[in-house]
Image 1 (cartoon, helix red, strand yellow):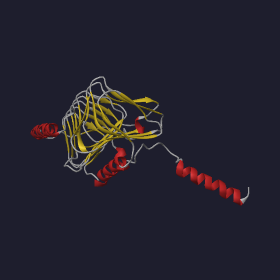
Image 2 (cartoon, rainbow, N blue to C red; image 1 turned 120 degrees about the vertical axis):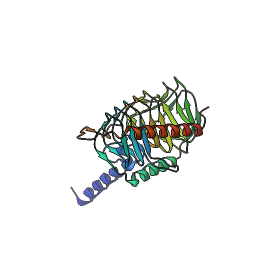
Image 3 (tube, rainbow, N blue to C red; image 1 turned 90 degrees about the horizontal axis):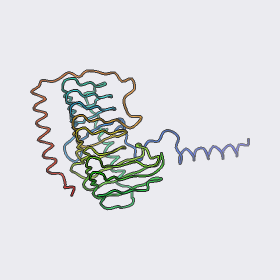
Image 4 (cartoon, rainbow, N blue to C red; image 1 turned 90 degrees about the vertical axis):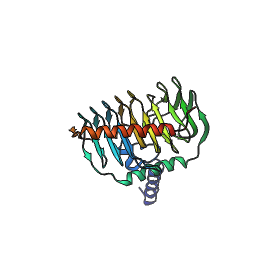
Length: 292
């Protein structure tokens, strides 16, 4: 083979590596170290960084809270917990516990949200009823309010490896038996929902698979909810009792997971912490924009 032909072929291989990168599909936006977590709360424009998970819940994947993580009784975390302040009720089992938090993870969350928001896309206005969107290729949609009642679904269609970004600027709430459905061969790793602004995101017991990024909002998940192939990156997170969250394939549970019982703090501490969480949640709900 001549030197000139070899040089030409080498150039083609380099070009293919640039435009068609090798390796696993990493998702629509680079999440940095935040991608290692299934449940994560970081400080944003408002004070935050707290995760509060109700009793008898199961989280498959890693949990992180920049300020604190509070776990009710009888919780199983099939992954690690990273936070400077961990409070846990009786019967809590987790993987490894790291009692500090790298602020760089918070910066990764904010950078990902800003990158997604900077992308131009199709403006859809408010969505308050069932709708199907063709999301083939790399699709970016801008939405005002996303509010779905029971039996209403936003269905996204596409192929595995497509990249879908929904930028939601207004109210965000699902009733039970409503939510986002992935049609055709679209995967959870293909979807990023980027919720902008302040307020609450209420998933209730709705349906969702993918990454939900709400850097400056509080995420509320109803009791008994179940999410497969989901990742939640928020400002604060309140999870109701008996909830099950399974992370997106590849980010949990951690390799070599070994269960560890977490010591229970005094009952008085748990009571005061629970009371403070209820008061805080009530204030956030009252301040949250109306979904009507």
